[in-house]
Length: 287
Length: 277
Picture (cartoon, rainbow over the protein chains, first blue to last red):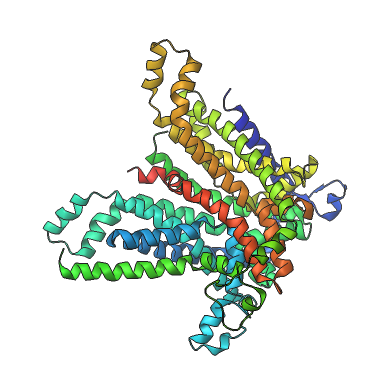
């Protein structure tokens, strides 16, 4: 059977861990168990510990705020750039597309490294620029030490990385709107804004929905950016999002049972969000 | 076009160019800094052009264990690409050419699995590989990567297989080709672009992945390139940003070229349902 290899590897590398994780989340599974002690069943204890721990809720809330802020900023800039691409000449459009593509093509780790250098407190070009613009307090300013400015840096990086996808996807959607529709609306006396609202928005709405959903799903599981920035000088407890929290709980402190239970939160949250995405896709696509 | 709209178009064009320059600045800055000698990297005024630059930073990168990690990354990526393509190709063929029970739910499962975040699973994947003695092994990491890229690869290839008209295959059968011949003479050549695109997708995913390799490859001698870049940065943060930028260039530039080749197909694959209209 042709499906078998794909199925086998999915079950082995995703299905079984999922099951294993479910089991582990009901067990007392810490460092002692890691070294061979049998794991003890503790029922819902892990979940109770987590739910009653206010830190988990802080982290979840922080992740959600971070996710929506990033997704919103990314969408606004991305859509604006897509619309901009439709009104400018070929030359500038090509330049804009190249600029966005370069950012998109950068491997995450490389971009994170470059951004750390840009934001470097002593020799970073951003501090240099700010000082030269007259903001003297940015001389030697350390961006990652303070919670709020840590997340500002993280947002700048995430938005910089994510906007190109949004801009290109929405632009692709916009170019599929037939020109005659605009002409007809113009003849009927519709203003530019009215044309945009009545013709463009309904026609690209499916693309916007999908892109926004993907953005939310991706921004909810931001891990690499936060992890690397924490290494570079952020205060871990103040800056953990769900992903880094689980990592530090499980592999850092050896609390595998707790971490497995926390993982289920992420999974459920993501699956709920993605079910909607899947439904939209299924409706559009003939299966 | 009236003069007014033309000036407006010019103004927007200028705005677009400014935005483009801002957006590509980090990439430029990476290249620029990698060519600067020590004293100019740490000057009070940054150098915006690498005039009279030096390649010594690249030498410092090559002196570290860059090539060992390059080898590990190449192996993991190679295994992932080949296996993922093969498995996904077979599955895509089955899904688009045959009707069978469970077909619809398999497609749905593929879509949902694609959304599962690595962050929700790495704890138990770590335990799994630990149990199989596959921690710190190329095979273990590749196994997880294959599972991670196969769903999207299936989804993408299915689109391509659907695009090959069945009539063509049937015509070949009527003309006396065997089923296998029809496949290799007609279908396979038409699918080649799809295979290339999916292969590059798998390549990019495996080459750039960070989270899982961080969890699985715990020993320094088994680092993949992204892990290497991180530890190289940590080690040289205070003293050698030129070296760090040279490392970033080496990690980034080859991948960026690949990415630019397939970017279009990946975007349309992701939003295919919506854009088709």
